[in-house]
Image (cartoon, rainbow, N blue to C red; front, side, top):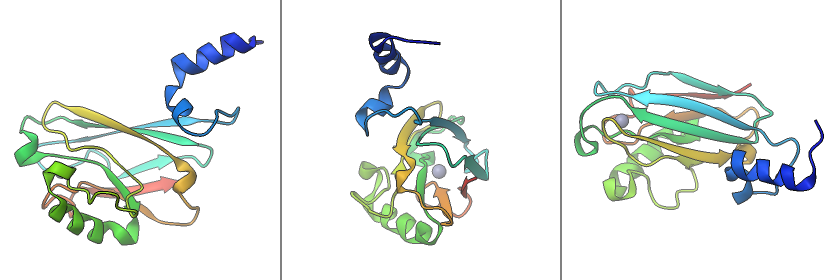
Length: 157
Ligand code: ZN
């Protein structure tokens, strides 16, 4: 299908606004969408999330399928190198809910959502350029006491 320049630009604006915020859109750009949920039993519904190596951006949506409020059963989704999980969770405790249990400007945090309560959802979009092949990545919930159960492997195939 041939598109003139204006039609192509319009498609970009309508379909892929996230790309316009980052690097200039390229023909090879690929936004990969992931979804995960958390419940009132301190569980994610997935123990691993997988993207392919050709994804240039990831759009992750977290849905809290429970009923409890964020103050008592909040969930977030935080992506880190596997070896940084404990330290990021620990510093998140200190940061408190005002910072979504993530230390502000924490360079170890590759991407994170805000904390949501029952019935809410949130999403985050990030570039995969920060990810390195061969590195092990984990995601976790940094709400106090949750990360031991609420974590999983983030895999790049
Ligand atoms: Zn949680």
